[in-house]
Length: 54
Image 1 (cartoon, helix red, strand yellow):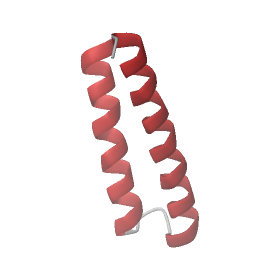
Image 2 (cartoon, rainbow, N blue to C red):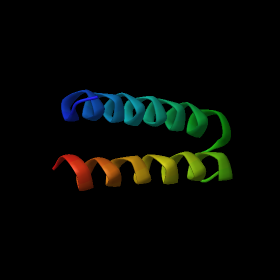
Image 3 (cartoon, rainbow, N blue to C red):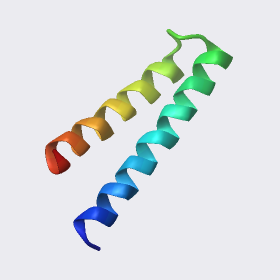
Image 4 (cartoon, rainbow, N blue to C red):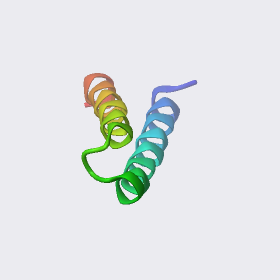
C-alpha cells in the first residue's frame, strides 16, 4: 500500500469516527463517557495523521 492510499484510509477513518462522535453526542450528550471515548479515538487518529502525513 502506498503512502497516498494509506493517508486516504486514515482520512476516511477520521471522518467515520467524527460522524460517530457527533451522533453519539446528540444521543447521549456532549459530556457523556461514550462521546469522550469517541473524541479520544478521533484525537489519536488525527495525531497519527499529523505525525505521518504532514
